[in-house]
Amino acid sequence: MSDDQPRSGGPPGGQPGGKPGGGKGGGRPGGGRPGNRRGGPNRGSGPSRGSQGGQGGAGSSRGRGEHGGEKRRRFPSIQITVACDDRDLERLITRYRVLELTTSAAGPLTERTLGLLVDRTPDGFRVDVRAHRLLTQQPAPMEALWADVRDKLPPALRAKPQVFPDELSPTVLDATLDRFVAQIKPLYEFDKLGTVIFQFPSYFTPSSRSLDYLVWLREKCGDLPLAIELRRREWVDTKHREETLAFLEEHRLTYVCVDAPQGTDTSVPPVAAATTDLAVVRFHGRDLAAWERGVDDPIARFKYEYRRADLEPWVPRLEKLADGGKRTVHAIVTTAPSDAAGRNASLLAKVLTEPPGSKPPPEPPPRSGPPRRRR
Image 1 (cartoon, rainbow, N blue to C red):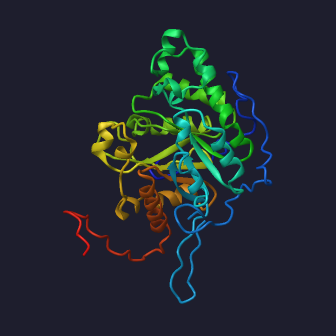
Image 2: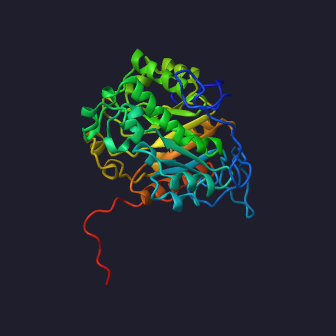
């Protein structure tokens, strides 16, 4: 299969019948989807909300404008958006139809954040939430745990400033996932949840243990839509790619496509593949030096201004993932800071929707030297 060829068929995009936590392992029971508190939601793409990023989506329509010029192409099922934390949420929900919320990876969400997402977003709005760090096999500060989960820890472990997943008993890990699922259940019940993104580290390697862990997640989460980002090249190299994608498809897990720095032993190539009826693509920037250093400051690691040449190869990939509008695509720009992510999202929308054969304006050369002093 080509790198850019979506997998055909397969179960719906993480949205099978059943309820969250309805699988094995004692997951939290879910409920139906009664719609938001201001009226029943419309699962369709909905009306456009402006022109930047992914507000209105970018099935493709082509034709001539009123004065003979070609119209911009449209792809309503491709939603271009940005990742943000809860501090920017109120500002950005008026500009995008989809957002990725990163705060959920760092600890429990506040009632205010959940209320904002449920009560103050329009019908058709979706939020992709990041899974808690411990659930992606990464360490977390002790204060990032729910109080009732901390109470289950041995006193010696509870006294530590940071907890590692391999220090947790199966009971505590179960409790952590149960609390996380219960926390985001209102988003699912009121039809606001896009998917839950599990961003695994590079040391999460292909193995029977890793596969068992993914099966455990699916069984515990019931029919919650789950998306898996893998940061180890071996998962999708030519030897393992078909097996990995088939496994994700079988277990109703969305493969997260990535645009990320290349040139390292762990770099995941830009494979555009869909394993459910939701495709997710995350654009992390291409600062190889910062990516390899693994700097703790996310703004330093993800600081990147995309250029047109970076994004043009993604146009046919996104088109194939969308499959003529049959599949929803969340194209998420995770670069930092937030204003740069917005610019990158706007550039991606512009490149994607340009009429075929249009000649783009020349890009300005990179700025060098001290800024000119304004007289």
